[in-house]
Image (cartoon, rainbow, N blue to C red; front, side, top):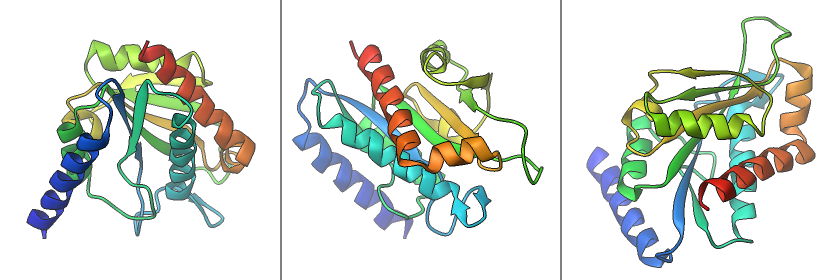
Length: 195
């Protein structure tokens, strides 16, 4: 099974790279969780769906520019093992990787609000986090030993976009307006980063 999955990743990578203009830089969006891995949830609203919707919004904004190409590690409600995600990332060799997540705290209703960014132990990752933090209400930036960060060779960050058990964050991240605003903020960062 793993051999088939790696073959599919290899074929996808080769096919994708053969159709991508050389001048375009690749940016990977990893919409966390998926499939049977729901991630955080609140009243039937799941992290996996929020981050997938935001990832798709980011990808939509890509069509109006020619500096970079957005590739998602998943574009439907499927679950890819972390090793499959990082294998794909390292085969494509992107400019940067953004892993999208939604936070949760043990409280029923969290007073904690805003986003958090986790980085690799590299200057490139930390600089990317600083650029992103200028656009978002970031409560903390911290180096963390997470698979997607540790195993990705490209500069990568993992961003918790807000707290699913904070009413304001949840309303914002599930609204069409909020998802479009988050996507636009990332597009702005990417445009600055790829100049």
